[in-house]
Every structure is written in structure tokens, then in C-alpha cells.
View 1 (cartoon, rainbow, N blue to C red):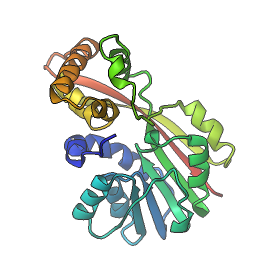
View 2 (cartoon, rainbow, N blue to C red):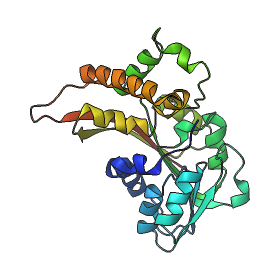
View 3 (spheres, helix red, strand yellow):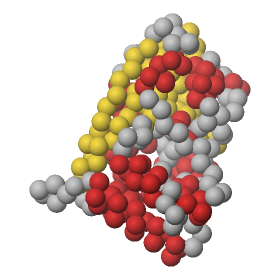
Length: 258
């Protein structure tokens, strides 16, 4: 799978950063000494943490070299590490806050992952995570139906995709094996988009990446994206003012090591 494209990802930077702000505001830690942002991307979520806790040591971790380079260029005052969070991160030491905004859906084996991240916490530390749940969203369902069609399914025989989405019930069962101190909520963000083409652009930097990586020919990519946009036209109605409402479901949880 090709590397991430930071500029494309940040086309909707405001919408992608708002959940990080909402999650950060629910973390009840007044003066954390050390914070790690797992799957920090281009640093937009990490900068939110720095704004609230300017004196904290903050480390951003991501397995995308392109994202890390963008973060280094934009935010020079923090530490950026290119590493795979599915591996052992214990060499980074302990943290008062382990934070992750819309990243762990790309990391396999969430049972082991959450246990490992929780073990990075100091006493009285908090693991704060936001993860999308796209399973019932038309933008995801239309993609699955299109890629499974007779025309396209053979194009994705060698699909490399670690993407997974789960329910809040799934995550609660994992978390209650780690701690009794759990705060969990689900929010639907209603993003206002200018067009169905913008929906395709939104997903091109995230959920579409593995599929586009399989389509090496640019004309084939454009044909695929055109058919995908046609499906989205049917799934997302145009509002009276010509805009498109794009509801996006996100699961939040904070687990404390009390």
C-alpha cells in the first residue's frame, strides 16, 4: 500500500481535528509530564495536545514517513518518531497520557494493541482514543459493494488492508479487562460538504487508499472513482442549499490506570 498523502489528508483538516479536540477536553489530567500521540499523522492532533499542555514532553508516533516528515516541518517543537505501534513501544518509557485520534483502525489485533498501550501508562494515567465506526455508513457500504462487484473484484485480489472497524461493545469488553475506570461515548459528526466529489476526496486519503493502491493505471483509478461517486450520489441526498450532509460516526473512550 502506498504511503499517506499529508496534503490530501489535511484538505479536511478542521473536520478531522475536531474529534481530537473533543477527546482531549474530556481527559482529566492537570499536569501530565509525558504524552504520546499514537498515529499522529501530520501532527494536527498532536498540536491540540501541545496547546493544552505546553510544558509537557509530547511524542508523536506514526508508521508513515510522509506524515512524520510533514509533522516535523510544521511543528518543530515536538518529538516525532516513525514507528509501527503494533510493535513493542515500551522503549519509549511510561506516559501520563496515551492518546490516539482516528488511527488504531489501521492497526491489527486491537485486543493486544490496547493492552500494550494501556501498559505504557504511569499510575493515574489515561489512555484516550477515538476511532471511526464506518460499518453502517453509506460511504463504506458503497465502497464494499463496488469492490465486490463482478467488474472490480478481481482487481483487488492482492489487496493489502489492515483496516477494521468495531462497535463500542467490542471495545468495552477489551477495556473492562484492563480497568474499571472507563469513560465511553459515541458521536455522529454531521460534516457539510460542497459536493459528492468532496466525499470521494475525503475517503481517497483514508479508506480508499488500499484500493487505489491496487489500481496502478490512472485511467482505471479515475473510472473506479467515477463509479464510486455515482453510488454516493444515490446514498447522500443534496440538501435544499445544494450542500451534502455527511454524518460520520466516531467512538471515544478514556481508560484510566487508577
